[in-house]
Length: 481
Ligand code: NAD
Image (tube, rainbow, N blue to C red; front, side):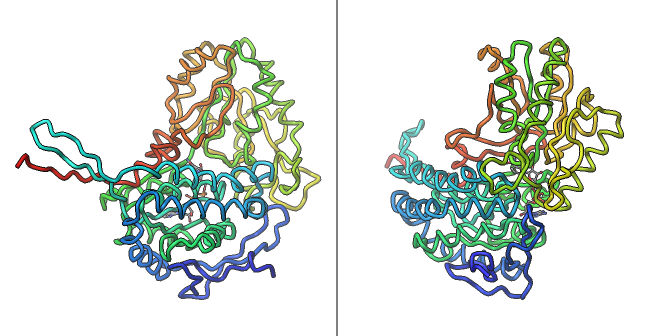
């Protein structure tokens, strides 16, 4: 078997380390339902070893100047970039993401993020001298927060890991990355790149493990900060533990974002963006705008535009560049999504396209992209995160009604406004209870904070805001004599 698909060692202390037990996990290819590869699975003893390695590495790593760390990170970014195409294909095979998307978000985004944070710290000073209001001065020192536990899900495995480890390493923290077992194999690319870049041993550790390993990592006494992306249920459990321990935590959780089509919207623009905004990654996207709100005056037009666009999407092999919708990550995920489709039908809502599994794709965990219309905003399919290619369309009467419906959700992560009047778009975006909103598109940006409010999480990643949580401030007061 190709060695890159057979990873029976964990990456701890700069070395491939045999786990304490022989337990492994098989990664199943989403499109073929066959075994793609095998990964070691960390137990709590392996997590202990990884945290110990990260602690040992911390003093020397934090003592480097930001410019010295940036040099290491530049080499790390180059090593990731050199692997971009292979990484993108591997992640697509693991989770079904169309390769045209994967090449950017799994292939090139991690090296861009590492490079971005290398540049963000290069040239910065550790100490800032501030004149005291009472005479004398204060030296305000930025120290790295310490050992970071980074826990990530399977849907955007590479970029969600890089959003954590790039700022953490740049700030002078050391990292234990615990990726999801479903996408274990691509995570080891970070280890390969760390070795090639010569990152000092223990600065970055990669330990694939399940829920128990993750929970052990979160409450480990050797961990100083937790950065988590995943479900709201797991995020709340992690937040409770961190609250008890007074341990800083960033939580990027679920979503059920609204796409508000205004009465003056250009429906061609909306339809052209629908795949990227509402069905991106086969709908397995936390910020997807899956709840479409349409003005009653143009309701029929919106239903037709959405239905026609979705009906014409190309379902296929995720490795084919023409594919727009690939399979879901697992059989369990497909069952879950089909269960939501059933619940929508049971509640009496009309399916305008899709609604099942594609007849010509008997193998692979495919679900047809599906549209429900006439959906009440309180319906289960309009309130719960489906995490599959299922859209709902709900009519509204007037702008206030639309904003009220957009905000009538436990989540607040993404959202979009479709209008030919950008000022109006900004005004509406400003009233949506959400961490991020797109006007006539939706695109995360390296330099802009990403994160949620309400049940979508706590804290921000990306941009300068995504670096700040990896520092802690120390004030050293100086007397006047
Ligand atoms: P999940 O919460 O089940 O698992 C995510 C990760 O956490 C995995 O590595 C898992 O092993 C680990 N884990 C689970 N329970 C844990 C616990 N109690 N303690 C420590 N670690 C634990 O999520 P999933 O099903 O893999 O991913 C899908 C979810 O992620 C969706 O809800 C989606 O919206 C969310 N998500 C959010 C964002 C965001 O940025 N807001 C991005 C992508 C995905």
